[in-house]
Image (cartoon, rainbow, N blue to C red; front, side):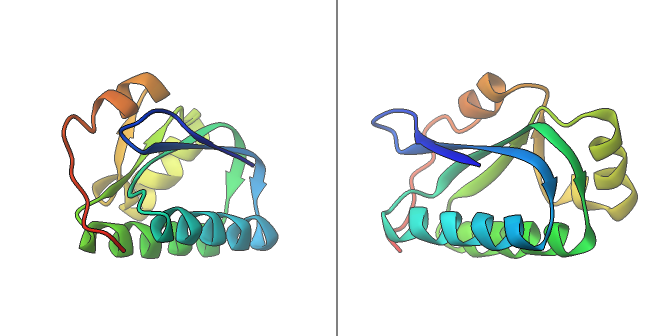
Length: 118
């Protein structure tokens, strides 16, 4: 997993790699919590290199997006492969997250979103 601040608008890009398993879920949750404490509540998760996500991973992502939306922020998803897209549709998570075909569209989707400090 890599975390990168993209610009002065405080949009963070998190690129995930491999399977989202129990260890990776903890890393994701900690990274998102750290970003929130830094005042960043505009996050793009690039899933282009993720092959699998389990129910625990979906639950942690759903919990994270709920927490961040309280602060008027959001988590956007980008680059889901067909398998992940299917998982998100089957579980209804495609109604929870804004999903974009690529990271640039996800970044552009933030427009002038202003967050409340954590």
